Amino acid sequence: MKIKLIILVFFITVTTLAQSTKNEDSTKIFAFQKGEWLRYRMNYSNFLNAGYSTIEVKETMNNNKEAFHIIGIGKSTGFISLFFKVKDNYETFIDKETLRPYRFIRKIDEGGYTKDKEIIFDYTTNEATVKDYKHNTVEKHPISSNIQDILSSLYFLRNQDLSNLTVGDEIELEMFFDEEITNFKLHYLGKDIIKSKFGKIKTLKFRPLVQAGRVFKEQESVSIWITDDENKIPIKIKASLAVGSLRADLDAFKGLAHPFNIIFNN
Image (tube, rainbow, N blue to C red):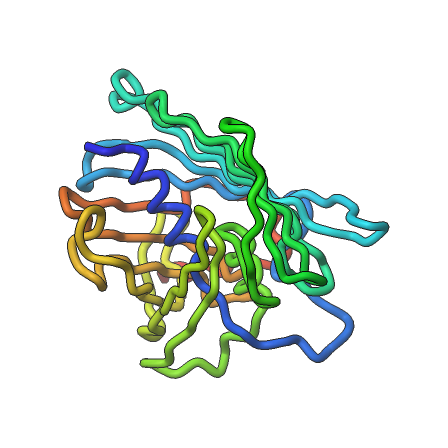
């Protein structure tokens, strides 16, 4: 079983939702804030604990402008870590005005397979400079002005108005990952109420189209639920893999910018 793919599946599915709309109001009210912290528990084939992933929001400065610093960490735990240790670190730095990434870091160690890369996004030249510290190389790649990385896309989505979506709507996203621009398409499946460790939660359900074959069982093998509130937190992910299945559930949180709505049973 390729545990490194399980960790990567989580980050890709949890962060490949975006909507190409702009907030015309110059005063932004963010769906997230400094200090927000989310932890997800991942299970393989519904019984084997595959690991945990955390995503944390911090603040920083970029050219004397306020920016967000998002840190995502994924690692294997328990029985799996005895024979295949995984520790993945993803970081993105996002301009507060545009919610576009200007820097992205990927440091991973997956059973001895390592990567250590940094990407600088330049929107004046529409180029991404990829610095590979492991191989001591620097490459430049053309990008569009609407590009996102796999972490920034989540926070871009969360700050959009999704109230006008209707069932069947399709959302497209350009993502720069592994030195390539990938076009993701996602279908909105409607509203859903799901059970979680915190209680029943109102959610919006999406299905990203993925490539069938080596990792995923079918093109429509992944479903993701985000909370139908002002936070728009990914709360549940299910994926049918070529071998087995993956499930990620929100396990803990703190520092939310808005109330977390729970449906209490009477």
